[in-house]
Image 1 (cartoon, rainbow, N blue to C red):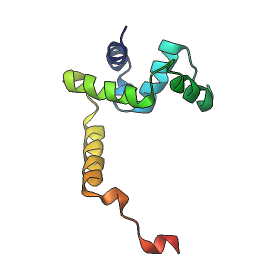
Image 2 (cartoon, rainbow, N blue to C red):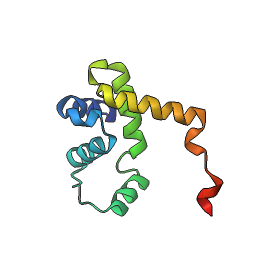
Image 3 (spheres, rainbow, N blue to C red):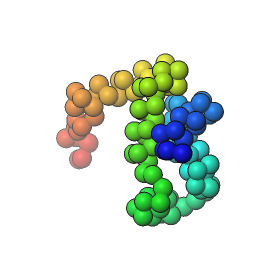
Length: 104
């Protein structure tokens, strides 16, 4: 089964994964690769580096694509609004503004 198909199944079976990439990562790695939530991150990074499991970014991109293709699997309206606001802040450069007083 392709990564995209697996992500779609997870979004269908575990609605909380539509709102949280971290929940998606946990469910995907647990079911597809038998990694528990207690697996050390260093082991997960090594598996990603060795291309034995897909990266977090790959799973995020697949989630975005699946939600684009299947609107019924989209995030809740609250999360969509929050993501939209964060995207606007990013594009307006607001996320990168630093007060010079912060460093004194």
